[in-house]
Length: 277
Image 1 (cartoon, one colour):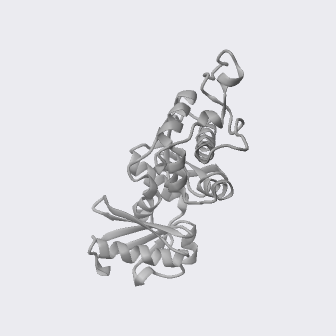
Image 2 (spheres, rainbow, N blue to C red):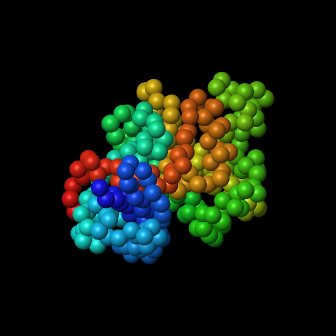
Image 3 (cartoon, one colour):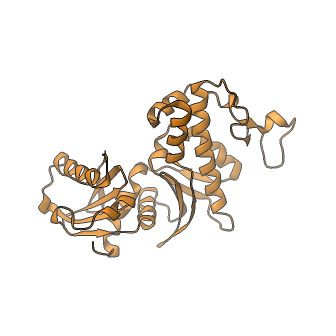
């Protein structure tokens, strides 16, 4: 049996993994000006870096919004497409070992996928995600370099930006501790430092996603949420999500290959017999 290649094709960034004997090998990513260049660049780099010949590849599985631009087989290899939400669920389940959860895919926006055993179902989403973070950073910090914004945020003080329960009440409110956020960015001033602005933006995006994820589970018994996508790499996740866990009595999980889960799911879906390109 050859290698199954899973590829998550974005508009500018492509993520690629190999699946052999049930194991994920050497995930990688490439950024380019357009999805086709990104796809073929990632594929070529993956084959070169891992000393894989085309004839060693059994199947290519494509997913992601950029896959719509791919109209034929990749390098003449057997190629199939798989629906992105299914890939999200399969990859997150594989990486987290959880099969009763909501997968929170933090991309340009954020989608929520119910994973209940073999049931993978898109249940909604919000238009807040990495695109929001990049857009606000361009407007307020004159950069869309997320690594630079994150580095600035490491020096920021969220108490200068967000209004907390303790700022407006002498006592905790029912179900709300004194350090819970009452209003995001409500304390921001016109002369706020770049460091505080950066942390305020990141905090707003991640808190909105975390709270929306919890709301998506209302009416169910799900208490576990698997976070996937590039935003999981932000170091601020370790500060922002734990208080939300305590507030809502839930658990957020970030798998080892969180940014590659959709590509992993695409590879795993091969046995699902996705539609041929």
